[in-house]
Image 1 (cartoon, rainbow, N blue to C red):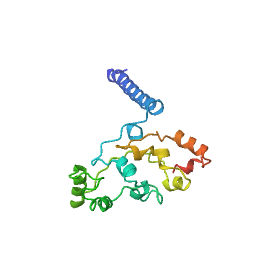
Image 2 (tube, helix red, strand yellow):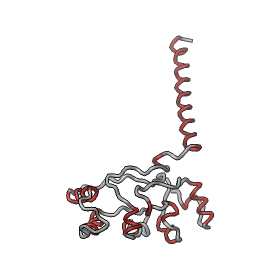
Image 3 (cartoon, helix red, strand yellow):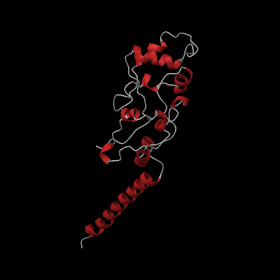
Image 4 (tube, one colour):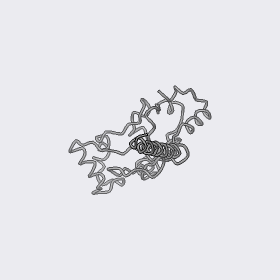
Length: 186
């Protein structure tokens, strides 16, 4: 056997071994560990503008659907247009719910004046091969807090349920909802 082949065999074997070891680590983390941060629980991400859900929901009394207007008519809850935020905030002046000179409101106004969208960081995410219909869940009487937790009491929104398939299937079974694969998967 030529020398080149003798050297290549251990190198190829080492490469395959490294790939298998990495695959084993990823598989183990995916199955047995906490969910990956992008699909998992943990402290909510820092947002470009601090939006205190607790003040808007508990103190002002705004319902989820007032801001997340497409939640009961489509696949996604939607994020309100910046103009919708200013609709309430522009005329409140020094109302008890607004701190005069609020830097967060200044950021909001800057984005509106400069027609620059706010790049919110997503908190809840499902894999691309999963379809989730908020509308169906709302029509079935499932409260937003069932999956999202007490967002109204959160200063910073975070994911409180792992939203993995087992969690969803258990909920479907408990509520006599369909458990056929095509209910949630494309």
